[in-house]
Amino acid sequence: MGLFWTELDTWTAFTAALAAMSCAVPGTFLVLRRQSMLGDALSHTVLPGIVAAFLAAYWLGIVGQNSEDDTILQFVFLGGAVAAGVLTAFLTETVQRFGRVENSAALGVVYTSLFALGLLLVRMYADDVHLDAECVLFGAVETVVLNTVGDSSVPTAAVLNGCVLFANLLLLGLCFKELRLSTFDPDLATSLGLNSTLVHYLLMAVTSVTLVAAFRSVGAILVITVLIAPPVAAFLLTERLHVMIGLALAIAGASAFIGHALALWTPVAVFGRLGFTTVDDSSTAGMTAIVCGLIFAAAFLFSPRRGVIVQSVRQTLLGFRILCEDCLGILYRREEAVSGSSSESGPFVNASVLGTLRGRLACWRLSRQGFVMAAENGWALTKAGRMHAEHLVRSHRLWESYMARYFALPDDHLHDAAHRVEHFLDVPMVDQLELELDQPGLDPHGRSIPGRPASESSKDEKNSDGGKEDAGPTE
Image (cartoon, rainbow, N blue to C red; front, side, top):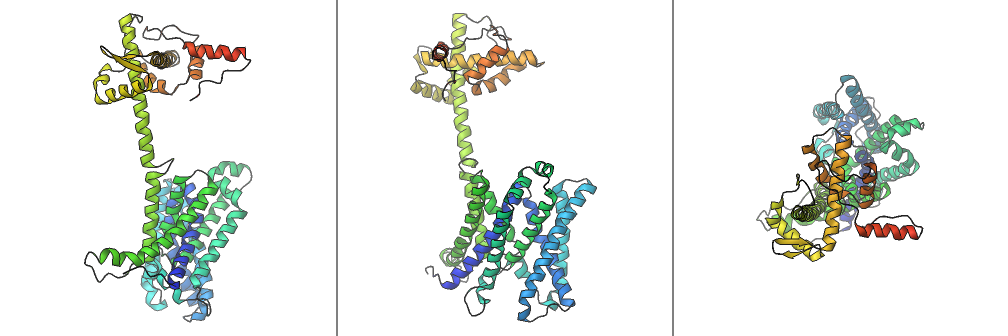
């Protein structure tokens, strides 16, 4: 069976996209504030707020069971959600401050207690007030097309979530500087006269209203996915706030359309082939959450800057570069030992690494670069390799001398620190070290410290003759 897409499917996916995008806006700032769990808590704690508000309005006779009370009912839900969101933030800060516990522990106590209270209220009064617990928890985005605006085909839920999205974007545009400043540096915001606490409570109120609007399409359980997953995926892909917000909105919207398409296609295409002929439908809200998770997983693995695979490749390349430089250092020290230019051998990198598979691969790479060449005893340094090795050994021994002068460390503790640092010191930094140490001739182990390579000295002379300062080597 193929994928049949109708106008009803378009409105269903569009409503889910509006709900997901509206959640992504406040979710971005929750992620940046490292308060993602607070979003999870709000998605649960607004439940007792809306239930309590509905019960209060029902008992006071403000709303009844007729459909004409639907508009009033939405405002009742929003009011209860705002109260519950602000109450959650206040109780969490109170428990943390007076209970002297960490934020996550205080949040866990508050939100589980309030959510349990909400479930208790639903359980006790669901039959009396016709409140569907499964709809509140899991959502029913496929049914939004049954409730439209007037005689049109526009779902009421699409209008509601669209209004919330517009309000969130409008608030973001009006308060962008305040949100950015209080998010990244609340202490500076306070010193400049901006009430960071008020901004925090405003964000909680906006998040609560957004969650209530999304309940009918996403549900209280799954709303946390579209609240957090798109911003986190965007955070892994960029470091600019404007771009992050745009990516979060795009990911949230695309996840809804892709999720609805998979909800139509997956049951027949996958379960039908496995012999489960009775499985003929799937949840759009659930598939939307799955797509959000898959996009996050892709960003987590393949992000150009923070992806696990990219970082693993970088670490592997860095480790291989360090191994190649270690091989150069070994060959240089071996030449020192043969020529007798160093009075003491001292501790250095284990020369047995040259005989390992990794060592042979590193030497092969160095030979391709022109740093080493084959010799009777294995490998020997070329002129270019010797210059590079001299820089490494010079960096190593100067750093040992620096550590020995300014830190009370025994001599046998100097080598490991210098071996790590030598691979990251460029020529200007090594020159500064040498000047700081008054150009020592020997390191703490009694070995001679190589001078600056002649090529670098000649560059300095040319720059000096031309009246230009030394810009350092080009990487």
